[in-house]
Image 1 (cartoon, helix red, strand yellow):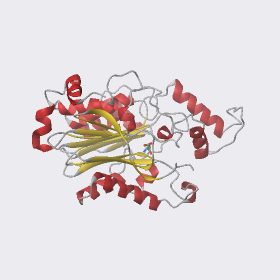
Image 2 (cartoon, rainbow, N blue to C red; image 1 turned 120 degrees about the horizontal axis):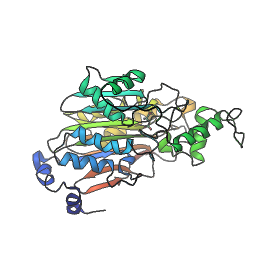
Image 3 (cartoon, rainbow, N blue to C red; image 1 turned 90 degrees about the vertical axis):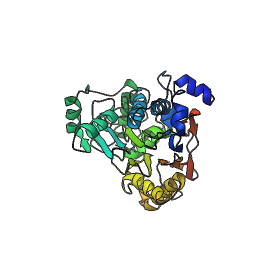
Image 4 (tube, rainbow, N blue to C red; image 1 turned 90 degrees about the horizontal axis):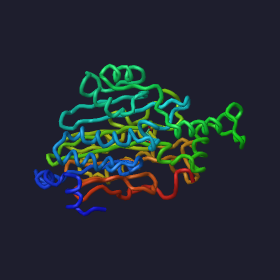
Length: 360
Ligand code: ASP
């Protein structure tokens, strides 16, 4: 890990950072889900680092954050976001994304978008080039093509396709021959793939949320995902829903989510977290309030584990107007959330609400 001056020099942020950091007393910072600080594709910069460098050299905060998450979207080895994301039940990759620009008070989003590797940029185009906030499905793809995005027939990689085929074998062994002849249905087949180490729980659900603030206190956020693996075609999760998978109020803070979208959609918790921060809560306390609320709202037996706790993972990320931040998770997760500030990119342990694991 480089020290502060090594990081600032190496990233070229050295000239911009000291003045930028002192301006109005807000220290620029970027936070993201764990994959925001992962190198998978031989790259030299992680998403949070790319975003922080952009912010400290004076780029628009949202442009900088989106340039960061583009690294993950384009990474064929990250099977939770963008190109190579795990497909739906038909084997088709459908992507969701949203973005919010605090100072401009604008938002854009796409749902169930096929064929574009960087849905976050299409969400930004919706925000900037239309009178709308959310475009979905074929209309979103046609819009993307019309404004100049390359569309392609299939965003699967060999890896995501192979995992989908394995899921088909487990759910439909009469037609997709499975040597073990295990007949498992729906979500349980997905869980069995997690248990067998074929799919990381963080990728069964899996997303990148990235939020940042510059020295002027301008806040923006972006959330982008391939959504729940093997979902019903057309299913849209929380990521592109303003208030659920992302919410930014430039006067207060930003919040976003990863994990089981259905649990978050019910309570539109990103907005809830921002409202808790508006009421004076520290980002950590505000985000923990949201987790407690999700837990208490989860009462269906099929969604509970043997201890009566939620049988899924959910994480929230929160950043306030003063640059204070937090990452919280229903359960302890091995890899911390991603952070980049003047001391460089690193992972920070989540604060978690519940002991054990979701499927225990
Ligand atoms: N929240 C996303 C969804 O439900 C997935 C995830 O973050 O893992 O689509």
